[in-house]
Length: 40
Image 1 (cartoon, rainbow, N blue to C red):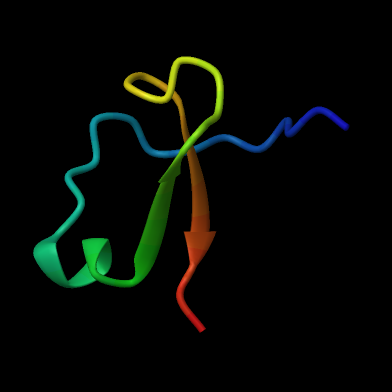
Image 2 (image 1 turned 180 degrees about the horizontal axis):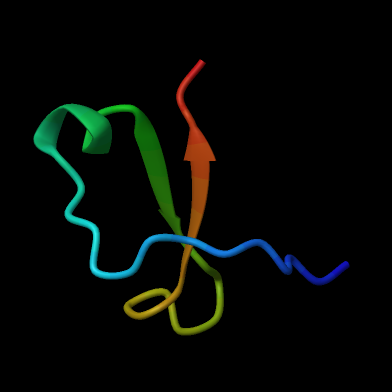
């Protein structure tokens, strides 16, 4: 499914916002590609 929503460009993520996500490197090219999941 394609996401056709419009999003704000060049938005800076605050330190507080960044603590609310989890980044997991992908198995392939994990240095560049990440999976982002919310913290719960």
